[in-house]
Length: 111
Length: 113
Image (tube, rainbow over all chains, first blue to last red; front, side, top):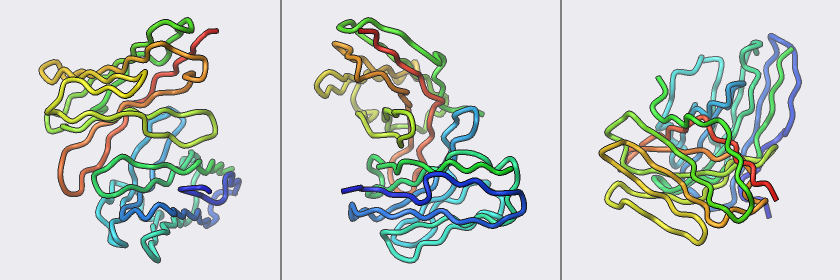
């Protein structure tokens, strides 16, 4: 039974398109995160939500918009995709302050 | 500005021997440290953590050592097994409230049978 799931696993799209990545956790955690792992393998926090409220918002273009409809879901919508958005995006969840549980990642390729 | 650094991108160790993975940090406000393991095409999985009030934490074959004065931590795996072959990420955060976790760039460990 998957703890943190993401869909889709792979996403190939053209520049200028809008796309969404969905994340769900069934661990009962109160905090969810989006990370980006770029080609240099840096794993960087983008956003974090605690009980559906945004608590961390790193310097991310406002083309990226997270949405948390409830505590178990955190979706990432990306407008006007650019080549530099190509990366692996990881969703994670935790109880606030505890270790994080990661999803399997979504590999986004922008052509 | 990379506040958590893993200077060895890769490490090869014989099965049964000790693996030592190193991590340095620059932010003196960090006081909670974690190690994650990542297999290809999977997300990172939590391995072990240590709070700054300790200098050692052990869990089975895995031990993390923290040297606050040197801003250095290390992960020891004894004995190393082929299934330990993965990328290991060091991570650090402050304590309390909404503290983001900062990750290192990872060290790829290969355990040779």
